[in-house]
Length: 152
Image 1 (cartoon, rainbow, N blue to C red):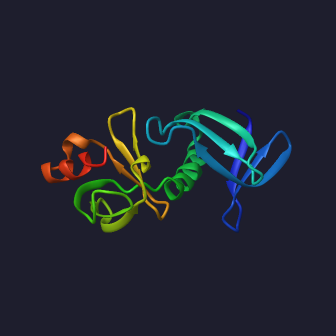
Image 2 (cartoon, rainbow, N blue to C red):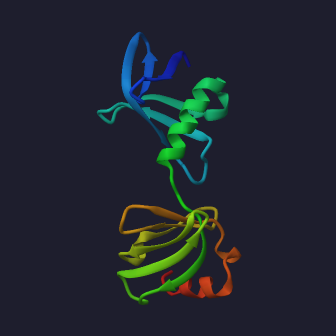
């Protein structure tokens, strides 16, 4: 891979590839939850893929650090530790959860907003657009599992 990646003074990522400079590129992980270190695409402001990177750990340190900074901001998935309450067992319902970032409330619009992940975890999309991660359902306390089972 012969490319340069740096941060523009305005904060945007700049990709130099084949003599062309692309400003405002966005890193997009192919599988952010199941394989976060593999398969990253650098996408232009028009949404076109400019560069595919098979493995992040194969990149030089400075490029890897820039991409890690961008991904931390982009791939925000608070991890649910406990379900404290749900307003109703039909949807839409308001969930109160304890996460690794603190206690919060969100709206679950429908049961389809709960996705099962290949590793046995869950990804719950809130009505506000935040995705909450349940890493291991079996690790939740019993009351949390009971509440969750009503929606699965």
